[in-house]
Image (cartoon, rainbow, N blue to C red; front, side, top):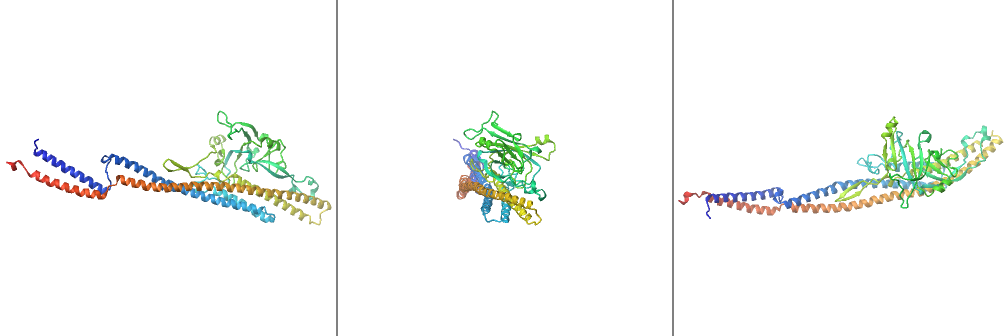
Amino acid sequence: MRITNRMMTNNMLYNINNNKRTMNGLEEKYATGLAIQRPSDDPIVAVRALKLRTNLSELNQYYEKNIPDAMSWMETTESALRVTNEIITKIHTYCVQGANDTLTEEDRRSIAINLQELSSQVYQEGNANYAGRYLFTGYKTNTPLVFGDEIHTEHYKITETMTSDQVEISKRIVDTCPFNTFSLDDYDSFDTETRPNEVTVYRLRLSYDKLKEIDEGGSISLKIPVKLEDGSYELDDEGNRIYSEEFTDSDMNVLSSTDPAAYKPEPDEINFLADTGEIILGSEVYGELRNSDFEITYEKQDFEKNELRPEHYFDCVKSDLTIEDETEREEKAIQFTAEDQKIAFEINFNQQMPINVQGREAFRHSLGRTVDDVVQAIGDVDRVRDEIEEVQLAMKDDTLSDEQRAKLTEILDVLNTELDLKDGIMRQSYAKALTAMSQEEDLVNVAVADIGTRYNRLELTESRLSTQQTEFTDLLSQNEDADIVDTVVNYNAMQTVYNASLSSAAKVVKNTLLDFL
C-alpha cells in the first residue's frame, strides 16, 4: 500500500485533534467535577443519574418539608389536647368538691361559675390553629370549630342521629311550689296541698338548646330508622334511609321547660322542650322505642359564643339570614354532610399518614350539656334556699295574722320538701357529671395516645429518610462525580501524549519532495 504525504498529514491532524479532544474532556471533568458532561458521553450513567436525582428530590421534599410540617401540626394538636385534658380534670375535681355535704351556698355558686368558665375554655381549645389552619375541623381548615362570638345571622337545619344508649333515664322534681306567685294579700289562693315529688324522666338530650320555637317557624321531627343486623341502616333504591315510625311537632306536645307538665308527659305522649333542647318520652313510648335509634331534625339560629359549629358534626343545611329574599336564601343554602375528613401527608414513597384529629374525636357537645345540667341543679337548690329565707324573713313580721302565719308555715314546709328533693337531684347530677367527665377524659386520652403513636411513626420515618438521603447522595456521587486524582493523572498523561503528537507532526510536516530529490 502506497503511503502519501497527504495521508500522513491527514492522520497527523486526526491524531492531534483526537488527543486534543480527549484532553479537553479530561479538563472538563476536572473543572466541573462530573464524570460526564452530556448524556451522549455515557447514556447509562446519565439515565441512572436522572433516576437518582428524582429520588433524592422526593426524599428532600419528604424529609425537609412534609415531615417537619406534619410534626409541627401534630405537636400543636397534642399540646391543645393535653391542655384540654387538664381542664377536664379540673372540672372533674370541682364535681367531686360539689358532691361534698359541707359546701356553703357561696361555695356552690363559685363551683357553678368555675364549671361554666372551664367548659368554655375546653371549647376554646378546639379553635387551636397551626399557621392559620384550624386543627380540629377536617378539610374545613379555614372554619373554626366553635363560634367566636354570638351569631344570629346563620340558620341551621340539623339532622342528629342518636342511639338507644343515649336515652337518659333521670329524675325530675315536679309539682313544685310556685312561690313567686305568692302574695300575703291573697294567701288563700296559694296551693300547699300539692306536694313536690320526684318522677322518672326518659330524655333525649339534643346537642343544642335554645332551638327555634315552633310558633316562630321552627320544626322538629323524630324518625326511627330501620336498622340491619350488621348495625347499618336499611336504604331504599335512591340510597335514603327507610323509617319505621316518624313523629313531627304535630305529634308532640310543644312546651317550655318551665311548664308544669314539661317533665311528666302522658305515657303515650312525647314532649318537645325547645328552650332546653330536650325530647321527653312517655313511659309507653319509651317502652316501644327503647331499643331503637333516632334521627332527629330540628332548627337553630341563635348561637352563643363557644358553641360548636354544627357543620363539623352533623348533616345540616346552613342558610344566611342576611339574605332577605327567602327563595334566594334557599338557593344559596349550603349542604354539609357528616363524614370522616382525615388530612393525610405523604411522608415517604407511596406512604401517607393522617396527621389531624377531628373535633368529634376530642370535643363533644355532651361535656357542655352535662355542665349545664349541674349548673341548673345548683341554681334550683339555691333558688329554693332563697325562697325559704324569704319566707323565714316574712314570718318575723309581728303584724301577720294567724291565718297568714299558718299559711307561711305550710309554704315553708312545702319548700323544705322541695329543697330536700332538689338537693338529691343536685347530688345525682354531680354523680352523672363525674361519670361523664371520666368519659370525656378517656376520649381525649385516646386522642392524645393516637396522635402520639402517629408522631412516633413519623419520627421513625424521618430517621429512615435521613439514612436514605445520605445513601442516595453517596450513590449519586459515585455515579456522576469524577475521580479527581485519576482525572489529574490522566490529564497529565494526555498532555504528554498531545505534546508528543505535536512534536512528531512538526518533524513530518517539514519534510517536502525537494528533501528527497
